Length: 114
Length: 241
Image (cartoon, rainbow over all chains, first blue to last red; front, side):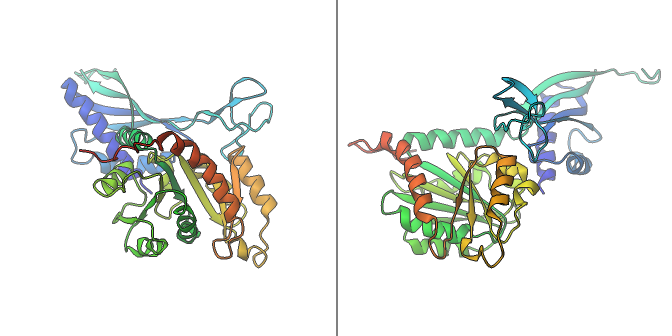
């Protein structure tokens, strides 16, 4: 498990943003895809430890889960995947290897005190 | 808002990938490899799936045709590197200490000052781990996920993420298939479910079954990239300062 190392990376990104803008960061918003390889609960567990003794101590973590969507060759558009174990179109059932969303692991925003 | 609060909170957009650093190093590696004409293959699997045995055989077969080298990652010992060196191919061990996966920076650092000239084929054996390596791009052209016949036909369903980030699946230890009553059809079905269209090879490093077919496939993929760089004047040295 490497969620602590991921959490530390997030803390660095958020702290750097706060430093650049000269503002106190009180929250960090993250998008986490189902296929990112990082588990939401494990990341939440590692968060407090990662923030400890950092410029953003006490900041809250807000995770938006991104479900898997695929490029369906039959529907010819982006559709939700059936499940992580069944990478097929959730609408028509056609196997679809082209993942459109679901691999995200990004910091989208920080909450700052004015 | 709470009347006692004197400060207001606002949201500032950031939009930065968490593993941006790794991605940048991986991209630089990819550019380097493209310049020299090196085809890079990484291997991931659980500990004990037979990565090293498979790679040992592959290195011995590949060196006849391509300038080949290998990097191998482990938490401790250089046993794997020593074993692979028996193939007479340059091999370097990356000892990660406590880190459970390889990252692009480790690959970059290992290649610095070591990568053989005009390297055409580089293998990177990741730390035995079906979870963490999935998140880290190493700059490779092809990622192999290995699973042996003893690991259970539902392995792909248990580790969909790593199968999804890999390009080709290799089922190893086929010499044991009968003894464990390996259900090839179920395994293929499960691989197709988590990664439609994934190429699958069944091999035994021990008795050689399937190895020729796999090498022919690899040959075709490597050939395409190498052809472009096998100019009379030769390729550029990868680590020119």
